[in-house]
Length: 99
Length: 270
Image 1 (cartoon, each protein chain N blue to C red):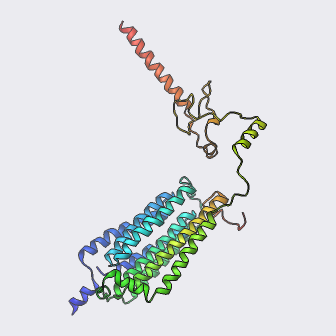
Image 2 (image 1 turned 90 degrees about the vertical axis):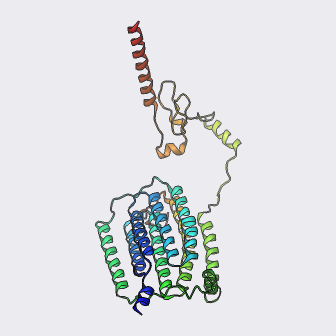
Image 3 (image 1 turned 90 degrees about the horizontal axis):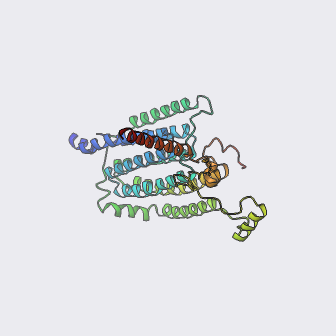
């Protein structure tokens, strides 16, 4: 097996995540699709790290994980406060900036 | 020479088998994430995909990242997702009605085009040489990572710390709600009840004069009709009151019929 297959898998997962962001309307599921895209990028980074024989790709994947953790905390807090004010988790209902 | 090149650009049969089996499962999990109607099912599918990605990290020699993926992603982030799903409401299924006509098919088309573009790009890139991590890991894997983090990437590492603190403070600010008025004391509440004169004693408990003691089953009034007052306000607002009075009456009727049959048979046998 050629290890480039890992890159193909990463591309496939990224595409699925992107399609999910376009298709779904529940904010939580949208957020999960974004996480899927981030994970696909991480897989590509790790595969590149092995290809080029240095650890920089893994370091970048590690930083991606840290940023994703911070992003999830803030994003889920926004979803919770959105749900509190609108009683709905659908992005269609959040069409106004005021309450 | 060609054998060396092949060894450098290929992996063992075991890894190939692992890749094809787990890769299929990962893609199925990703598809389930975007196709499942309920958010809980999506979250669980995504957790499965993330665990498989952790295995792929391990197979690619990223041992530290593989463990971090399990701990941070499946352990912390996905559990946070599940927590919010439970908070926001498990039963809130996504409506499948399209608000923009044809949007779903256009999205699928865009996804297909994007995927083909991406995969064709990877196919055309010259990625035939695979070096492996042998030399980079010569001083130890975690030692090598630490050396990079604390020398070349030390600034990014420190900025990451600031980012995490900001995120924690931001989450607290976003979800915290200051109480704008003083909470009513028990004395004030009881005085208000007397003034209004609607329901002076405490509300009746669910399950009184009923055959169930679950909180969503209303107690029965003496004439056998369910009393809405016995079920908590939250359940009433959600419409989750379970009416079993008909069931109880039917059970009673069946019991009476059975006993009548039995008595009748016993009388007949006499």
